[in-house]
Length: 221
Image (cartoon, rainbow, N blue to C red; front, side, top):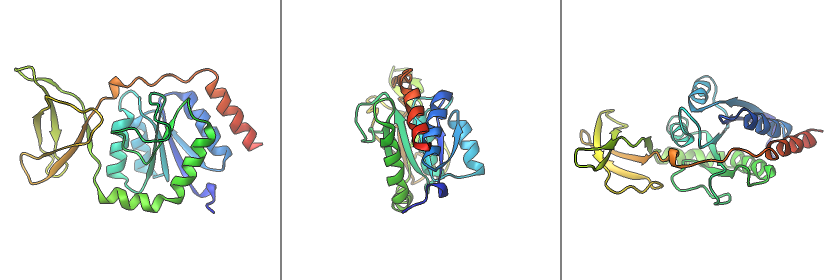
């Protein structure tokens, strides 16, 4: 059986109350916890220290959770990641286009569900790390606008040669990993068009956060 004190979890959410509440819940279960206010803050922390698990909201300013988790997968493939949001109704299933090992429905699932997910990911972390190394994560890119003919386009940067090139996207499947050959080298670029602005994650209700705090306090008693 794993010892929770041997594992660290980074909680990433732009809502301070959410970071505090989930931090209390995880600490009460014996985990070491650090927190970050957004994706950029989290990446700075990851440069200094790499946790076992990253728990990240999807709808955040500055850098969306979609893009942040994709960067984590490419740069830190040994880290297991949990995406969380209140904007989906898919239960524990990871929504399409989300680069994560597990999903927690914030505000809809019992906090004990999160603890179960964390335990399962720690137990299977070695398997996930191998899977992450096997297939590169897609890059998240913003919509760039329309060309002179009104056709939507994006600008891709090849992950091998680092050269950028425009790509017309007359039809866009917002939740599907897409591929296109690089115009300059033999590499195939895997990408997802960032639709985070179209995802409205509801703010946590007043009852939700105290409920998590009460559960954490009770477990730590």
